[in-house]
Length: 285
Image (cartoon, rainbow, N blue to C red; front, side):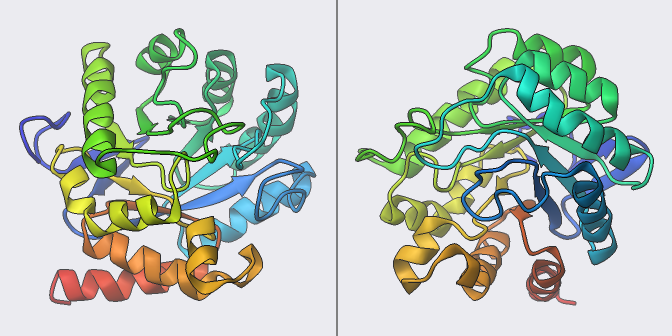
């Protein structure tokens, strides 16, 4: 990793599991415990169903599980922290005793992150890169084993209203560099960065970010990419979310070939297979 990275080499450790990002790519399974997420809202609202889905993703080959209780789809409104906690805590507690995988909590609220980490999560995945809640950086530094810092232009409510950039890759890269440095200075050692595919970007912006992903990787931090079923795939293929499996596979392959360390996906079994083929090409089998 470059001098800007958080630790020497390419190994991070979550719990007792070591993740060497120089050897292959890793899969983060999406577990939305929400009624209104753009692709799978309402499917895993019940605790039993959600825990079963998490276990299934682990069996399908996921390396991380990402649990979220608030939709960040375009046009969505935030939910109260109490409701977010009601949705996610029983699921995280249930999974923590049943899967030997790191669990990340997808939230921008410090109070939610703290409770989730106490319940068994180990990673904070913040779509605002810890800018929305000033307490988040302290909670993460004190209680999390790592963070995912994502770029978003605007808020979920407003982000897709004519987003504009002079150079989307440079602007995203500069933002992530600033936020990663803030996190590092706060004492957070294990940092991943996410260019925020679909978060305040047009289809053209998203495609450009994937094409030039190596520029983001040049920051020296492991890069997480979340292209799964996103609207840019629908724009290219003219297909609804439920029919974007092949488009997601293409985006995942491009992401990994261009340096992504982790891909965040709904369809774990299929994307594990895609990732293994791309990894075999990258690492000569």
